[in-house]
Length: 248
Image 1 (spheres, one colour):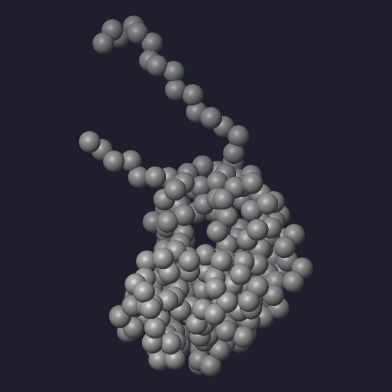
Image 2 (spheres, rainbow, N blue to C red; image 1 turned 45 degrees about the vertical axis):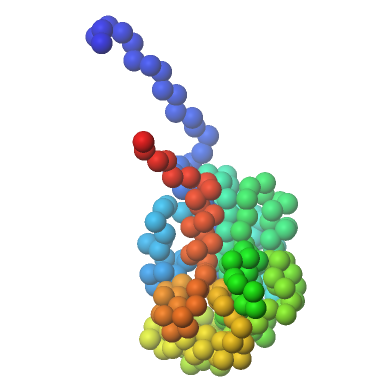
């Protein structure tokens, strides 16, 4: 190569504050521990993400009170993430399926609000006579409107963790900033066993709650059925934003 030949021009495009993290996550405002596997633990993800906490959006307000009055706050936070460089938005509560269409319409990038969006996809994989079951943090709060917004059939079997000793108490009632992880896992396993005992036709489970992925492997082993959660949704979602490049 001629040492006097100019190197090809390489133009780096600007216009953003942050680069290399195309996925934005809207977070509820909470103080319980975010253990590895939780959506709010940055080490959970095999790729960088952008976080934005939506002030005032407590788990109790979103789950037990239907997120009333919070849509403008979620839109504003999503717009901030897009301005920072997010090319797609997800959220850290499955109950925000209620905002799926509104966020899609408002912010102009792909949106996946809830792990429940996977239910129709998972159903398509199951053999005849089998169907998807849902494990949620609060069955009493998961209304037909939440299900319809995610394309979930209204008669889908659902079991919640309200009767457990730790998971619901810490995450939704905010009775402690600390959590006994072993007890929380037991709550998930007991709810999963109750689901398949009441509905033996359940061939796969979708976890509504974004705090449940740390327990998904134990649940799958206990039930002997596939388990899908926000981790499986978000890793699929990100794969479209940054498809893998394969070498020859």
